[in-house]
Length: 397
Image 1 (cartoon, one colour):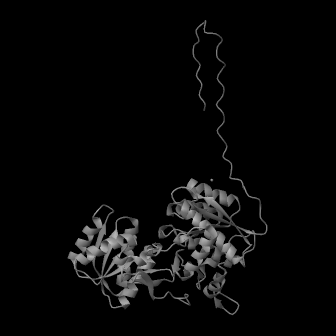
Image 2 (image 1 turned 90 degrees about the vertical axis):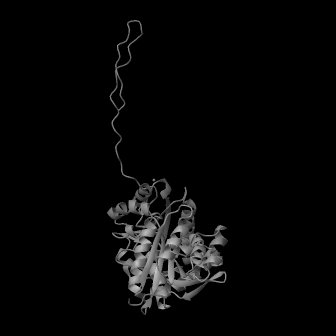
């Protein structure tokens, strides 16, 4: 989709980014003659409470679009949720937007209650939730009300039927780094993946990516979180078959534990990582990972945003708070042609030219998952170096 002379949205968005801008039973007993007056007769049980619909707590706003932000503001993930909330505030200030009224609802006290309250308050769009289980619980409520959900989760199983995922999908990161490795001459791959849902999805994505790139997976090992499990898995891996590159589908910290064991096992294979590494601010200085490659969103615009965030909120943002910022940029863009009081124009989310934000170009597929333009970075000499830049947009593909 384009404005004016068909300028791609991502270019217009990039310009805009410079603005960094909730019976009673009673029994009768036989009373002795001298026990005093008899008790009063039993009273009827009170009627059960009548279920009443949630009523709006906010006054009607005839000039702005009501948008709900569903994130944990308290509890274990409260700090992450507050960072997302701060990011949405900063995005509104940077864009100087006065057409959106974003109200935050705490999912830590109940995601369903938060969604019901938001919809009763007149929300036409939901940003969040953060957690996949909350997104799964909110989806049917929002769908019945005709309210789209832009979730910050990366669990692809919750996407579709009005729920869109802004989170970084592991499969895309794995595919990108495998493609780059294959283009660099690597044909034999191995994998180290943790037990659990993330590991299962990562291994499936890895096998598909290697096959699609024309390579082969010669060995694959799974490990749990017990002490010494990663080293034992590495031992089994290095004895299995030769390989030129090994994907460690885990955090940078876990990967740094595995690499020395790999070297002791006699392999100089290139280490590949996932999008999880980008959330580690100290990954570049991890000497054990020197020379490793991983694919993720670009940090160029994020660094500018982080500086402004620290200046305003006197603390560093969480890396994924950029999802909150970009969700507002997307909404502001679409709000230009969105009449107050109308439903959110969901069809606009399917724009094939996509959108752009702090994390670069992205667009939603028919499955509701954000397809992202990713770059490949190499850990080199105490820092990260981009060795394969992210595409600037999607063009006609």
